[in-house]
Image (cartoon, rainbow, N blue to C red; front, side):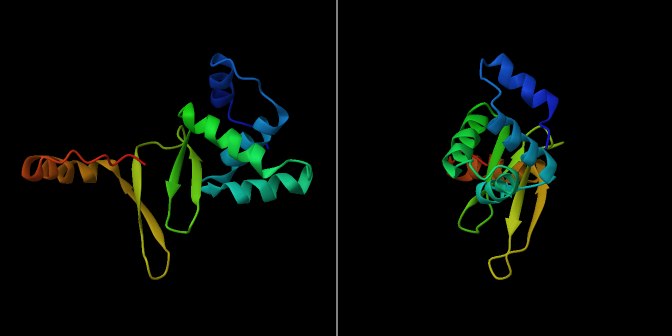
Length: 130
């Protein structure tokens, strides 16, 4: 579980300490290769370090989100999932089936025509960032 070097450097540049807990959390998110929940992160950390509290994970996730190093996505499961922003080659969104829960990602560019139509027809500026 090692954290992505660019993320580590970003934390240092912002003046934050690289605590062992932060390094573990970053490493798990980086290794996940996709969206991971706070609870899943907690389970993985507890395998090696049972003393780490879930509140530490939430505080770290909030910090990483504030620094725009991770994104938070609600997949309709009753909790949110996280992924590294740097891993996202392009901005994307998710469609989730309400019956089976299956989801798939699609490019941000597909929403631009909808944003323009909403603005033109209704004067509504849709915020489609997740």
